[in-house]
Structure formats: C-alpha cells, structure tokens
Amino acid sequence: MARSDTTTLSVDPRQAEGSRATRRLRRTGRVPGVVYGGGDEPQAFHVDARDLRLALAAGGAVIELSVGAGDGQPVILKDQQRGAVRGETLHIDLLRVRLDQAIHATVFVELDGVEEAPGVKEGGVLEQVTREVNIEALPNEIPDSIHLDVSGAEMGDTITLAALPAPPGVTLLDDPEETVLATVTVPTAPEEEEIETETELVGEGEEGAEGAEGEGAPEDAGDADGGAPDTTSE
Image 1 (cartoon, rainbow, N blue to C red):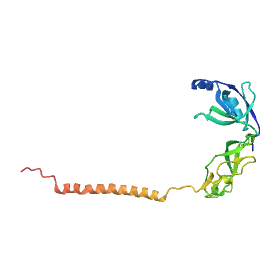
Image 2: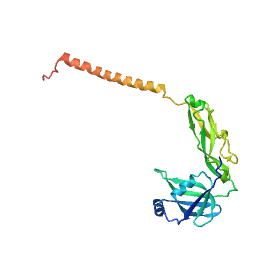
Image 3: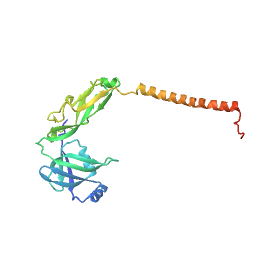
C-alpha cells in the first residue's frame, strides 16, 4: 500500500559545533540531523526525540519539514543512526524531494504464508535471503513494504525477485533473476561418518590403555621369578 499521507515535523536550526555540543543535545532529549538536496545548501537542525519518533512511525514516506520559521518542504528519510544498546536515534539525515519527480528508495520485503508452504510442512527451512529491494517511484507512491506470497514454496525452491509483484507506480530496480529473495532447503543433519569416526577413536583409546598395562606385566613377573637383583661385588 502506498504511503500517501503526509506527516508534519517542526525542527530547530543548529550550528555544527562538534561532538561535545551534539552530546549535550542528546542529553536534553534532542536529536541532531541534517536536511540536504533539492538544489539548496545542507541545513543542520535538532528535533525533539519524541516528535521525531512519532513522525517516523506515522507511516508516511513524505514528511512536511519546517525548519524554524521557514515554510514546509517535502522530505524523506535518507539515513538514521541508532544506538547499539538501546536502539535510540542518534542522528538523522533527511532528503528534500519534489512530489512530481520519481526517486530511488529501498523497501522491505514481507513474506506471507511461510507456515503454509509445502516445503516447510515437510520439514524444510525457509530462509529470507534478501530483506530489502531497490525501487523507483514518486515519493507519495513509495510503499511501506512489498508482500510476497510463499505459501506454495516446495522443498528445494529458490524464489527470485521475478516472483515479486511490483505495486502500481513502483519499478523494481534489482536484477529479477539474480536477486534471490528466499530459499527452501532440507535441514542439515550430523554426518554418520563423523559419528562413526568419533566412536572408533574412543575404542582405540581404550585398547591403547589396556595394551600399556599388559606391557608392564612381564617386568613385574620377571622380578618376582628372579628374586632381588644380584648386588654382590667381585
């Protein structure tokens, strides 16, 4: 489904003052960012973390961005840096766009009917190899995701981009035959040869221990038969 709704977001301009100033912003609940493109100079800004989170979760590809007292301008999310531990947004890049010009973007591929696939019911493993694909579309026609029905996937199938239906107004840019979206494979089991080899090694170890004990026995017996060694000096 295309993301046709537009979300508004108001941000404040900022001066690029280095990492110390950026850390201070984050401590106050603000997220630093940059908007660029559209023939204008890049502009740094900072935004309330909660407002940003709500705007990104609203389900619209296009955000109507207002920097300070300036007029709104359509932008899309270009990049988002997240914290490794908590996953919070550390920095955001926005790109100015024109609503009448197609742009390149990436969208997620969602697999439907995984549990109903015959190959999965037979014990196979369905692995999603590619989770994002490159597309071209007008900003307001960029979908949240593209769904692929895999309910008919058989054991050993390789599903490529050629099987993915493109939504209206969307052009898939990746190679349709070379881009593998998913595979259904037989689960691997331990090799019988490896198990047999381990068993043989354990057996050889036990035999070696028994042999070592047997070799020491004649010396003990010889000492018993021959008595104490002759220590008489001539």
